[in-house]
Length: 92
Image (tube, rainbow, N blue to C red; front, side, top):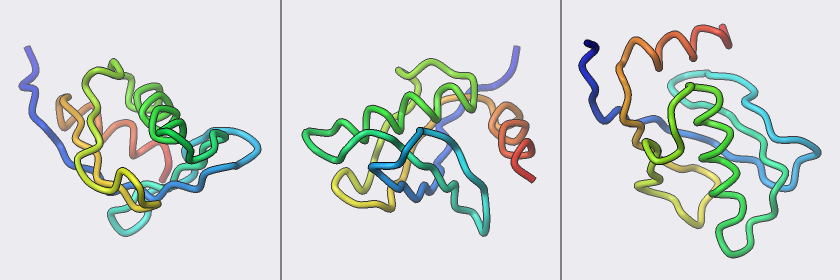
């Protein structure tokens, strides 16, 4: 059984995009575009949805711990480090 831990990930979000997608991973920052507008947390919910699909973990395992009203956010993901590393390697 893999060991689960809370991994922190720095994310740069571009709201109001044409479509939601993970763009790249560069210098320790994950770049993500979300189609939602940043009103009443809509873009934060969309960010969590997109990252959960990308890393293949349930949305309940992802928490925004810093930057709720900023384009630069820190996410905490409860998953194995191998799972996160495999997802990030898809972008390289």
